[in-house]
Length: 276
Image 1 (tube, one colour):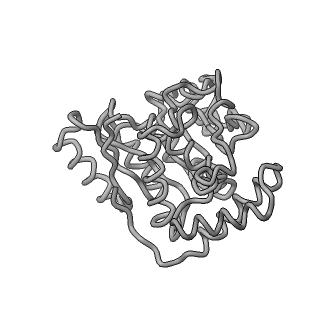
Image 2 (cartoon, rainbow, N blue to C red):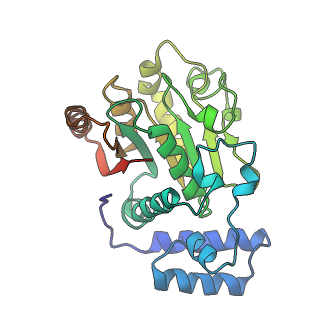
């Protein structure tokens, strides 16, 4: 995956200290541990959570998600498998590149067609970000074929569509587990006018509030080839990742999707080839 680099290091340093503070407050680390982990993380160019795991100062927390998160979210249940290591690589490149200098901490996950793994990738990417201690929000903005309520065992009748129709409030935000920093907003009941909902000013206001409340907001979007929803959502996010699937994604569809995003001024910060 290719991402743009940034010369600024202070945001990452602040987040590293914040992650250590969280674990100290939770009684999982002492201050000396945090200092040693920070030194190791800097030396090895690792994120704080990854450094703590490699030093065996903290344990991965797959067991807390038992019976609450689908096994499809492999980052929750099998954090040491090869696919999750690849997700951590994507995370690291995003943190060291895009997130450091981003004007807005909102990232849209899109692809040309259905069946290429957007929801799987969005869920697992959000999970590995949350595992570093960042308050991460996964927003299912696919109000045509939503999946996140299934992956996180959430009710499907109330979510983003209700929020944008002024029929629901902050109760649509679900914390995955009390010990997790991951929060999920399902798509909610399927509306007859999803595109109109995301084009209204209320959506801009909602997304702006969420961006302030969380360290990172990940948008799961519909397929770009089917509707203009993904283009609109990516433009509102400000940055996007284009997902492709090995032996499935057609070049013509990919090129058309990239052209739409570019035309709308979307910053496509990278592409990911999914073979999971």
